[in-house]
Image: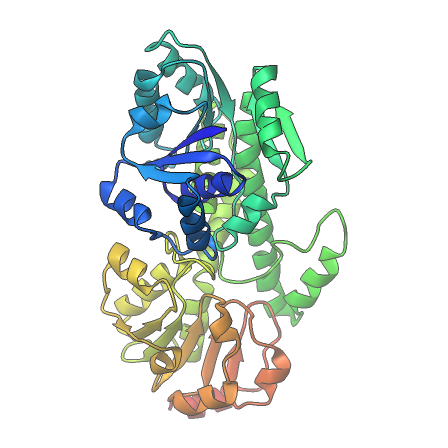
Length: 446
């Protein structure tokens, strides 16, 4: 099948490369000609394990190409995918300007029947909006499809090639069957529904996962107060098939390009039809507050005085195996520390350049290695669970910190390993090691 993918962001690029890997001829289109040139030369503008290798392989096989010429690409294709960005507007609604622009350009390039699918995450009714824009500008026949994506950054190739399910929203039985056959090599779990239900299904899925994260973080906060262990609680809960283990890991909250944007957008979608989504508003509020749990622990340790303290930060990506720093909890934590007069030393194995490009240096001392960031610090805060950090020699780490204070915002360290050290160790929702450390803390700080 000849496929055009419009937009080479996360969703468009991964989808296009993986369709080529399935044997289809794919042209990926982007207005950013510098990005197009990078892709044509075998580069990848995002960090995603395995993606560059697949891109180079399929370009060499003649199945994959990149261009800035949308008209030519659409003209050669039977199947056109819109995968452009839908960033949040100030009120939380999705900005559909790029969707509208893509629809208009597709209409102007139409030269025969095509299936046009929206893969971007969009509010309910957007596919109808796209179809109307195209129909008003061309007499050519086409079918409009909703084809939401369910990728996880850091495992996007795996998720695309081995999806839990494929969702196809269609009004045309013939178009739905074509797309069903296209995706059958990936999975038998194909849900065919109406377009509006497919659009809602994407938002509902992300909102539910965000809800699980905020729920277990609330449980973690209670566990800290009553002396329970949230990791044991979550483990026991997860064996219930109605609940499951996924997304029941306590930490400092979700970030990234999807959950924050999609939860806000769904709240607005509900508001636009006069419904107050109270539960989801609480989810967002809990998540926003949870990232400050690290700050509260630091302020407790230093009796509310962070001025002049040196704080090491390990991890600025919102999750491991990605360089995405959008909505990363690390941003607000670092900004708070700087405003409080602390000195911040930070390290991330992949995402530092993106962080500095998007947000500037923020007065941070950026380090080339994890131990360099930790050296001489009054406390270390682990914010992203990179494997490099998980493998850290805690015995060595405690010797280079000025004070052996470790705040594990992702619960990556085993209590047994920490117990063999002199660390004053704080995690999320687990009983404190060394319960009677107030006097020890005072001695360390003073």
